[in-house]
Image (tube, rainbow, N blue to C red; front, side):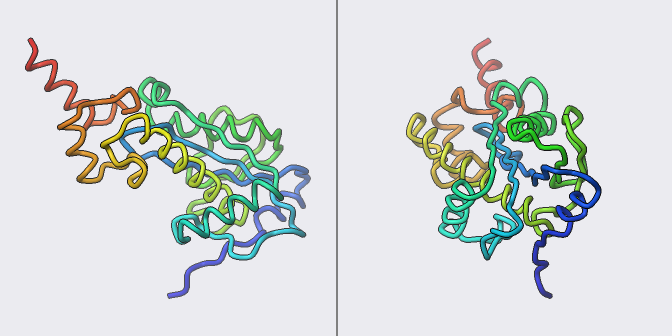
Length: 210
């Protein structure tokens, strides 16, 4: 079965309906136990789209890096985050939407194409949710690449501050090595306390010290 190839049809339709500044929006980092959630918004020039734009999950790390560098140089791009504290205070879905809202606001778009089935409630422009948008829409595919590369780099930096958890490899996701490190090394300020594996360790520690 052939994998769908993203195209510019959703952007073209929005422009035909009167939009003048159309962006694709995607986020990365809902599942990890540590680090922020990251979103990107990208406005592509239809006359200057690099070959090979696709859902970031289908690309090699080297290809993502190359495409992200190209997009930062040739497209209009905004990257935004919601912090670990915001994730714990709001919940991960709302925090991921907050990061999306920040990215869209930074570019001043008037139409946003959002990956997923929900539209962030505080967007300041018209928006359309596209299920599997990163596989169908070029601007969302571009946003998925930029967000993934930006967050991976951020987790490499955090790994240097908190060695032993393997974030430079697992990006904060709950791998076996990460879970073992949580048990052996404890919880860091970069861990999401509202996520069950982290919460459970903290709760056990409190129970034991009573």
